[in-house]
Length: 162
Image (cartoon, rainbow, N blue to C red; front, side):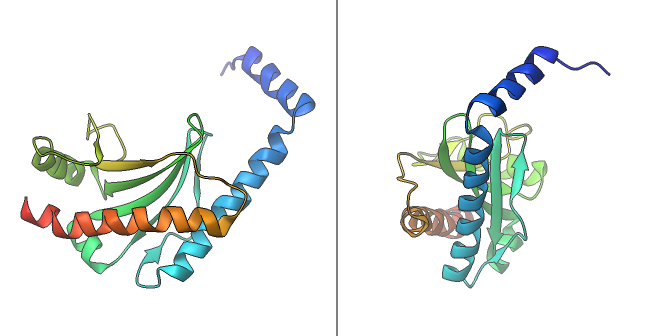
């Protein structure tokens, strides 16, 4: 198997000349804090045991409760590295469920971003959260928690009516 040596050299240079590794470690520390903090503040939800890191495309963890689970839906807090932004996603447990809800939502007016390809994209709907100051984990939780709860409410109430 061949690898792109230019990318590997760029990566090596970044590690040697910047604080990329320290920045990434600090991000992981923050994201773990958010998972644990939200789990404490939202005791009625089951959280995934770990955060998932997806090759610096995005990192996420998920939460659900019995009602969401019965609908085949999970809520995910996602951090998209390229845009350096948090997003809250409602995702199906599989592509069939995602396609089902996508087909029901595609002609509805939504305040959320609806994915454009439920067979390939990992969410049904998402809410982007811009410009959060990251110095305080508690502050970040105070901005993210209401978005999560609002999306849960939408999924539980509105998606039943479709």
